[in-house]
Length: 148
Image (cartoon, rainbow, N blue to C red; front, side, top):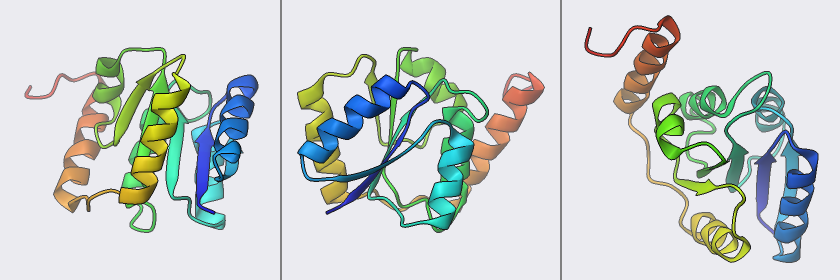
């Protein structure tokens, strides 16, 4: 059975996702923020997929996604964002995700996406893509528009 990591600060949402995925035959582990998820990823079994909320306390989804992609032992894991915010906002914080779903997520499309990404994995990510992502995030944190 393939392992899926759910990163979601709303306990009820995480619990529903876990029940749905377990009913489909996946093993599931969960974290309530990006920092907790990184600890799980670095200390435990690597999941076949990460399902992550974007707006979370302590370490948000953008910071978490960047940390995952910068770690050579984790960057191969497919990454799905789920958020009530617009995809444009998510993309400004982090671009190297594999799929985006608007909350509340629809069950059948979510399960189909999970099945596909677990089966296919993700294509390799070039180090130059990661360097560009890091620079863009640094500029955003400094509030300097890119290109200035």
